[in-house]
Image (cartoon, rainbow, N blue to C red):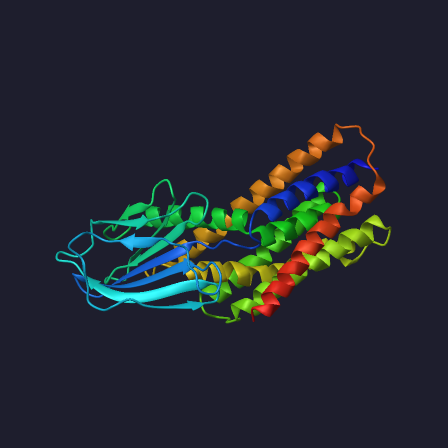
Length: 332
């Protein structure tokens, strides 16, 4: 068996182990949005991942002690999450005050926070189980916006297992450094176009069907790996940049859906969009670099493997992706 086949096997099986240990495309943090109405009044939107039809993750928002609710929280289960809204008031407002998330278990979920101030500026941050509190800040500067959205972009691509499996499948098909660069560049250009267009409202595509077709795109490239191993190179092997570009347009809508959940600061939309996209690219490059290092290490090994192992990554990736297709279609 060739070193390339060995690389496919080991890298693919490692990825599949990671997939079985985590939920599919699940970049599913809890989400807290605070929208300022006046100096002391805020609207609250709180969304928590569901655990079944009638259960939710047991975490809650804790505001300063002198905060009072002006309306009772109204909640409902929808699309795999429990959401509720209410209005609150605190003497002196929330600016400069600490808001905490109680009950955030390690490894279960992070919390994305978005604060919309009455002057149109916003604050976006991410809370971890190790640091589940934040201070509601005054108007943010450009540096804070850039840093926040850059980090969110990197996290989204590295936690978006479906996007990484698509890139992995391309890397297992494409041969030669030049063709790899052209393929990754085409994917980058394509998803940058649709990410910007969808985020800015120039194109509107419903999220659930897009997620289902993204999973189907992974099934397609997984099948292309099988064709190549069996000596019948497919479209991806012959025109990898074209396949990467076409499906990259689709994956861009998926990135836009994640960014839509986070939201954009109204006074710094171009900066936030640019930094999120750069973060996605940095995360993608980190993944490609890790793959390249693994390929170099594998090339130095000399070991005989059964031929059937060469097809294992393709069937593994395709099976997981097909499960996502059925799961997402059923949720439509």
